[in-house]
Image (cartoon, rainbow, N blue to C red; front, top):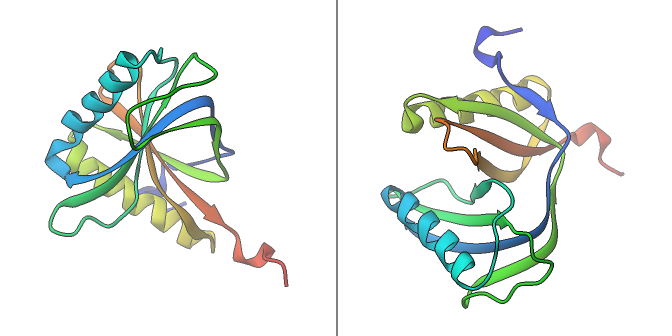
Length: 157
């Protein structure tokens, strides 16, 4: 195996029940502010977080502007949030490849993206979902990055 691809794993799915989400477009440097605002809004409206913070990067950031959707699993089985906030009884993305970001988040995230894409290419698989970032609940200095894929050789004729 190519040493560059070490650390990339194939995981079956990313799945949560009772998830609140919100999509936003902003300068990448404002990610922390937007995540904090999203979580605060959910809590203020009666949501009780029960899982990790998750977000998807839905574009290639041009001029450093990102299109991100935040996801937060909650304990409640129903939720009415701010305008633009959605409630999903179930959220699942599968199949996925996964890499871990540690250290210099900005540099290492780009490296993990490259590793994930190279792994898909190495296995003749095609990307079919945005990059999903799962941040640890305990505040640790790492993040899991996932990307969905499809095997074109298994496509129906």
